[in-house]
Length: 88
Picture 1 (cartoon, one colour):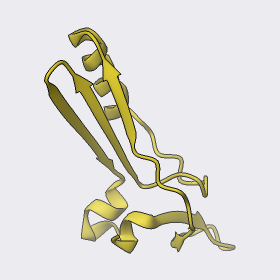
Picture 2 (tube, rainbow, N blue to C red):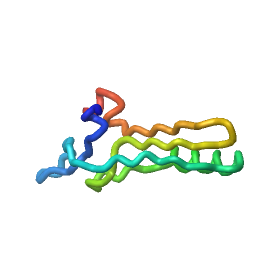
Picture 3 (cartoon, rainbow, N blue to C red):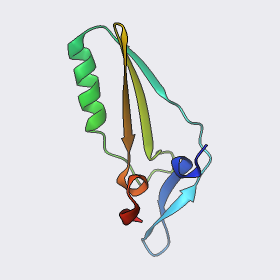
């Protein structure tokens, strides 16, 4: 397991954001949908998700597997602080 994907952001005493490794049970999300409309709505909701950086229980990576008919859709959301080097 990559430790970056196990990381969280916390605010320090000076109000700055800093990385923190807080143990948390990872829970990947598997969702079965029955219609294309249901699938599209779920994917839109995931794409509009806002990360709560003040929560120690908030992962900076979200993985959703959407099962629809004979296909599986992977929705992978990464907070930009772990996705691009210039943010750190």
